[in-house]
Image (tube, rainbow, N blue to C red; front, side):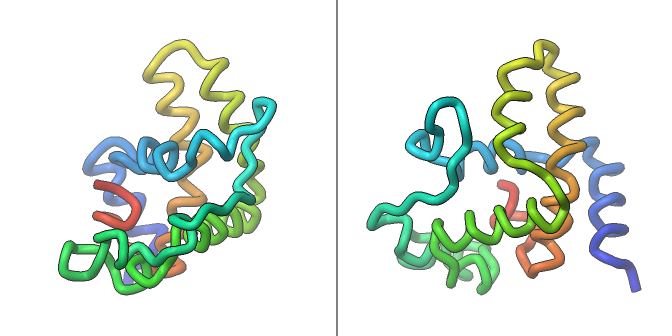
Length: 134
């Protein structure tokens, strides 16, 4: 049986990158999470505490049951936990976004940084399409 890592590596070989995981990652993080140029994922608003299913992201729309039950805050907490599990410092990602010039160089570097987090999220039960990419 293929491991999640093997499945992801095969998918990346087929598509060439992490698809829209990077743009989804950036979209999940609201502007209010950035303070003084640093990424702060400890935030909460009323909408951030409502399950995705209430926000229209449910199993009928193609999302996993795990994602649909999750709140945006809960999802970002799992994302943070996955990054810690992979020994990746998230504040460094914003710096890299601003310091890289070439698009292909940026994509390559971010794929390298985000791949372990993506794999960990898949291991936690999130699915490729809809939960992590679109």
